[in-house]
Image 1 (spheres, rainbow, N blue to C red):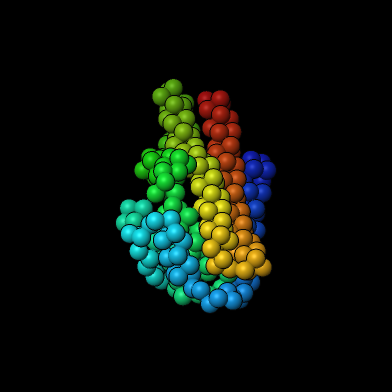
Image 2: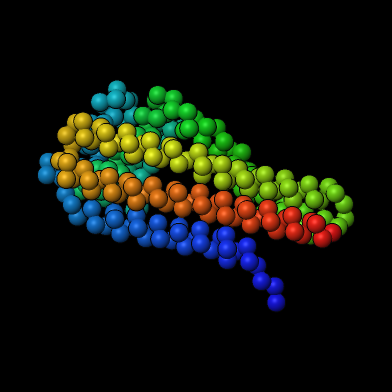
Length: 234
């Protein structure tokens, strides 16, 4: 029986970390979705205030279905908030809403990491789709010629783009949260105690991006080991 030690040593711990991070953000959001703003400000109102404070009067805020489907769409230049966040007055709702505003501000000021992330999205999408098929074909046909070995390595490069995308995402997400929390504090949208709740929600959410990077890197390392091991045997 073949034992794939690379999966158990590299990928499995990263996936467990991702599961813990996902559970953490869900439990933290659930906890602070019950901590309500003493001023009764909704997520949409807080987002509008932060946008206006940064001169982004032209960016609308829309309500969309789903849970935690909140995002800023740079193509349409609109912030879309889930119902709970849009209408909610909890510290969790306000934190998430203002985080998405943070992304809008990043685009407005030309924040470098988000410009890089936006630029590599098309090539990352292509690379992630063709990476595994190229690696499999390259490994299976490596005995037929050097060109198939190179095909496997091209697949590795395509998969590496996913890890690079996750790496660039980290500073983008952390910075958006920092901008959100600073504006909430400076404009007294939440009290100091309430602000702690919003910070914990955004910190928990940030860990999911750290976990996503860990999974991408672990999978990339595993594929590199597998490709090197299989092609060396040809």
